[in-house]
Length: 193
Image 1 (cartoon, rainbow, N blue to C red):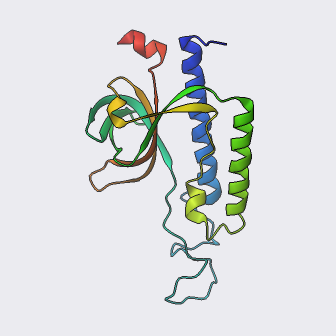
Image 2 (cartoon, rainbow, N blue to C red):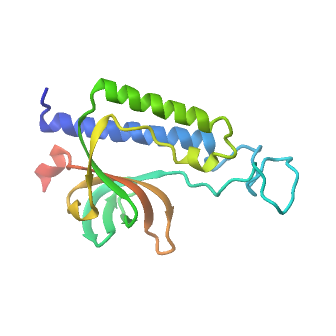
């Protein structure tokens, strides 16, 4: 079944929304600005014996993947400048170590089910020791339901819409990006240009 442009755009935004919800759930469950009092800001379980040697209760600083998205203004080497759809301001994405993909057709049901089963097994294994696996749990993202076409930063053009999963901001204000999903502009934006 072939989808028209509006349907493809809708499905792309629906998928991006689902991805944002998944990242949000992980953020709420394992972190957020009001981290549970059971975990102190020093990165250890409250009440754990303090010593200079790291323990199993010590974890790496938070590296939650947060979404940033918008329309590409221009690309300069491995830096992508977008108009952030959340703030309306320009945002610079440092994509020097990012994977770049474009969603293709839906994966067949057997493949999707196998990938989700593997994802659930992996996440359940990580949850056996959430303190030890804290950093990896923060970065856990469910597999896409779409076939992902691998791209490079040079394939991104002005006018494309991107959703980027970011880890942190550099001192220059640019976002360090882990993964970028490229999509065509919505039909209403394309018509306006």
